[in-house]
Length: 324
Image 1: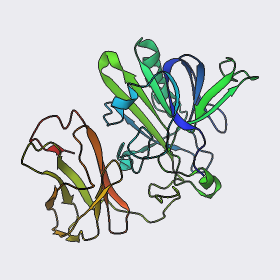
Image 2 (image 1 turned 90 degrees about the horizontal axis):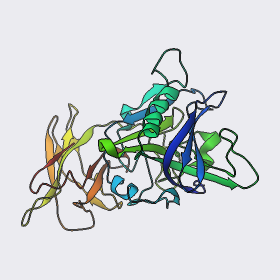
Image 3 (image 1 turned 30 degrees about the vertical axis):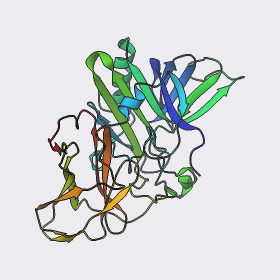
Image 4 (image 1 turned 90 degrees about the vertical axis):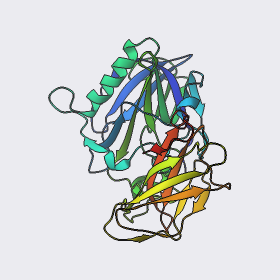
């Protein structure tokens, strides 16, 4: 079953604790109208225990314009596309192939996951106008309990700040789509967003659309989305351009492009080795909105091959093609 109480917490970071023990979590104390604790896994309970992470220090995505307008506090989110819910596979937040392994605690400075989070959170604490956004599952308020790390009462917080689909058999009951966790920092004084995403090595990056359960098949990034014309101007048509990175021709019959609202358009034709094909986007269900969007490429089995996102700023120049 999907997570119960999935959503996003917006607040001001005010304190931290490093994760320790057999199932360590980096702890962040957050203040808004109430006090919350964010519990971030820095080690997996399933072997291999070292966590995969991806940190983007100049994060850009269509969801940011929705986040900045949120009031402080916890907001429950529907697990569906075209909203603020996160999905590592379908939301095109980052390239999963860029994730790296990072242990929770190592001797020396700036070389483990505790220190990575400490760096970003301490920066957020030191900057008056900064905000932290934590995606995951809420617990509390626990009226009769004090928080076991920071002592505030009632206990209140958010956890599962990691990928929440494609789990191994012991945790597959937590699987679901559009319910992944993550941490996003906003540093307005620098006009900068930083995002950190976590996953466990036991999880799969190919999952069923209905359940979020793992699909064991490995899908190579044979074809990439390399460009899109989103704002063509009056009398011209939008388009998406794809590249065949392999040494063999690839028939694209049955392949599809998918937009932010999960609307699809079919592809046809053969793309030669090392070549590109430009697909015009005519009026129909599949849309490339100028306000920002995502584009996902599925093969003829319905498995994701590639995905990109663009913002309203990216699409602001009429007639210019966005290069990914």
